[in-house]
Amino acid sequence: MLKKIAIIMTIFLISVQAVSAAEVGVGVSPGKMSFELNPGAQEEQLLYVINTGSESASYEINIDNSTYESWFSISPSSFTLQAGENKEVKVILAVPSSAETDVDCKILVYPTSGTEVMTGIRVPVHVDVVNSNSGSSSGGSSGGSSSSSSGGGGGSPEPASNVKVKEISQQFVTNGNHIKFEFPQNATPVTYIEFDAKKSAGKITTIVEELKEKSTLTPTEPEGNIYRYLNIWVGNEGFATPENIENSSVGFKVSKAWVTENEIDIDSITLQHFDDDIWNSLSAEKVDEDDEYFYFEAKTSGFSPFAITGQKTGYSTEVKADEEESGIQEMETRNSVESENEEENDAEASPGFCSILTGAGIIISAVIIVKRKRL
Image 1 (cartoon, rainbow, N blue to C red):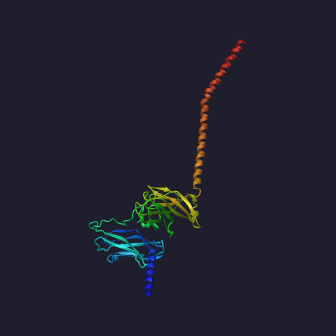
Image 2: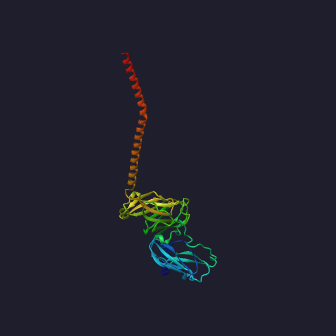
Image 3: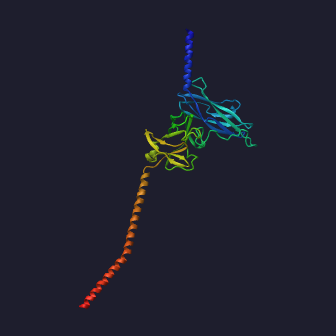
């Protein structure tokens, strides 16, 4: 009897452990990292960790190879995340002066709470040690994160110095499904991003960056009053295309305080998308509001740099007034020209009329003279 009870308890504990493991998850961005440095040099890159589970979890980060562990400085190396929350981690690589060959290792990211089963992720890291004499070692890798590219969810081409804050979200993308990325931390004005998937792509990472100034990828500023500059990267380069997704939209919010302080017309607020080297105003609709924010949704054909903008109240009225004034001036000018033309026409017509009167006068005078002679 005791043996049966022990077996039942063991099965129960295993079941509980399995449930806990399912509730804890981890995701990272980028999926791999690459450095190109001279011996004695160092470089900092960012790694984003997200809790993809349904409960709070603690995480640790370390290097899988003790030989190269001293090369890396990771901050923070341990932390706790709520479900859906993400963390920015600084990875600093300092290549020793004695280094001669390329190095490959992995960064381990794994939860330490909620389960005894390691359900972590290994992020491949390639270090191209550049030989100052020959130019480069036999690795031949380009510098920077290998997954960083324009429009790539694995990284961002925006300089870190221009990024105020980031928030990431991950979802599994399967053909025929409506996909929605939500941002529960409210770190940026973007509240959600959604689209209909036309192809299956597995787990996709979306990064939203709120910028300090306009993106370095945009040479010009959009028209209107700027609320926020943003970058939105969905998946790796080439994913967010009409061949893979459709019916894309961005949910965003605008502070009521900003609207009031800047006298912004609510109906003019929109999301502008930088595409084909120009700023395009997207079709935006106010969908909700609360005590602090107005909430909008804008349809978009792609993802890259964006700007939330608005026009001051009365802007359209002033333009209309200018147009009306211009129309009045044009009408007055037209009437003046027509009046002058009529006077000219009268002047041109008067010589002929005078000739007729002169002829009639001569005839009348002749008749009078003839009558007097007869008398």
